[in-house]
Figure 1 (cartoon, rainbow, N blue to C red):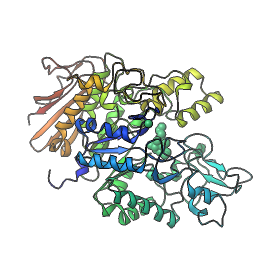
Figure 2: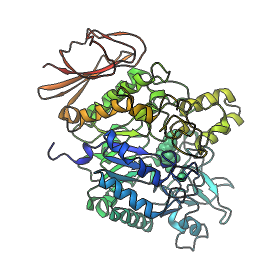
Figure 3: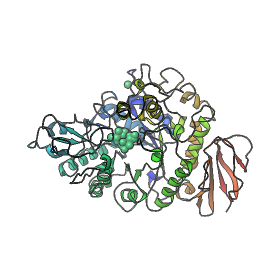
Figure 4: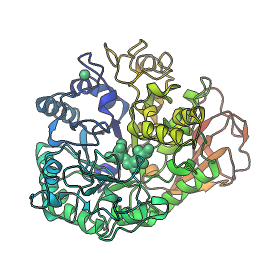
Amino acid sequence: MNNVKWWKDAVVYQIYPKSFQDSNGDGIGDLQGIIRRLDYIKALGADVIWLSPIYDSPNADNGYDIRDYYSIHADYGKMEDFDRLLEEIHLRGMRLIMDLVVNHTSDEHKWFQESRKGKDNPYWDYYIWREAKDGHEPNNWSSWFGGSAWEKDSATGLYYLHIFHRKQPDLNWDNPSVRAEIYKMMEWWLKKGVDGFRMDVINLISKPEQMPDGINGDLSPFCINGPKVHQYLKEMNRQVTAHFDIMTVGECPGLTVETAKKYAGFDRKELNMVFQFEHTGLTDGIYGKWTNQSPYLPDLKAVFQKWQIQMKEEAWNCLFWGNHDQPRAVSKFGCDLPEYRDLSAKMLCICLYFMQGTPYIYQGEELGMANAGFFDIGQYRDIESLNAYHSFVDAGTLDKRTMLDYLAHVSRDNARTPMQWENNAGAGFTQGTPWISVGANWRAVNAKRELSDPDSVYYFYQKVLQLRKGNPIVQQGDFRLLRPDDEDLFAYTRNYGKEGYLVLCNFSDRELSISDLHVNIGRLIIGNYSGPVNHHVLHAYESAVYTILI
Ligand code: TEU
Ligand code: CA
């Protein structure tokens, strides 16, 4: 695989530090805890670790509200612990990418504390301030975490913009000093030796000059892919990222294939890759993300087909089922009933990771960890979930039972329960009381058990990752979807020169006939069922990859 950028053949493992491994019994994951588990991550086959924010923060949004970009949150350790972590990662031949959260800061950041002192302060223009309109908010935009996107500041009597929580004021990227400060900070981390950034909501950073009301208060059309976003990302590339051998991946809500290529096109000099959310957003409906529905398979297939085919040769895909904002993959896309959980987790692994792009694995996904199983609002910690619960229930839009059901399906806390390491009450995550309850199925799903079982989901992930490493069919092959309208079968081929694979995934518990696929099936590469191979039928949640005879 000469001349292939390293990040194209890399596998990224995402750590949500608060929930990964506690080392001192305070119930909160920390950097020393991560160091203890590096061999586990390496053995899985990951090359890159993406660390969700570990910076100093009042934790209104678990670290996505940064108070100081240059220091480590006391819960996680000290800068020495970070330096040690980075060294240990590099010693193992792995790389580390940091979460870069620069659309907004915490309201407790020094810049904001200064800014709110008024128009004469040098930091005034670091944030987005507007006068009241007729004694009200400057416009009708609503925050993505509920309520107005404007907060009236008691010190100035003016309003500041916050797309997320009021403790996350949006930075004013039109101010060159803001950009210079951010580039300086990025350079500081890169000089320390970090290997890149995952950039939080990076396609929201440029706001329009005029801020008219949105339809139903929706700010998306104004702030997603704002007027100067490409100018700023090209500047960031020129001034910072192009000078280091790193990878950059932008988190970009609301992307289409066309807009994705503007951020990540090979010739664009902006970002290496972008996360798009079309496949995870298929279940969005009248209550936004709040639902108990599963995606309709033909729609899911159409989304992947489009991204696989239309990005080819022009830009690079991110392959992910989940992250710290999404429900657990096996619960959303597979089936988390005990009899099908492991099977469907393996099926999802094959389905996604035989496509073109860079795989991202969210902590615990490699064990088949499922949704939390919470049933009481008191179990939730996430600000988005709590806000949504109160606004829907208090307004009488949804009754408590329905909203709890929706939370159980899609709350971000489903992904944030402690990593299940062992079969005990603290799940091997902590000796103390975890900051959020352990997920319901820790007895069955934990690393200790899976590491001693050759048929576990963990070893299945390991095998699939080995099979795709440096494999030109997976990296470069053409993608073709078979039976697009089938509601149970996800089948596709990958062809590269005279070689190819047929990938078969049964997304249902029904037996499926596959005798009419008109593909010349060769050798079995990997499958999630043991026993004799049957070329005519797929069992419940069965998945298999075959070579194709061309
Ligand atoms: O998420 C951005 C984002 O678009 C979220 O609003 C997402 O739609 C939501 O979490 C889905 O439920 C990023 C981070 O990943 C998230 O954790 C932060 O809360 C958010 O930005 C603000 O920094
Ligand atoms: Ca701790």
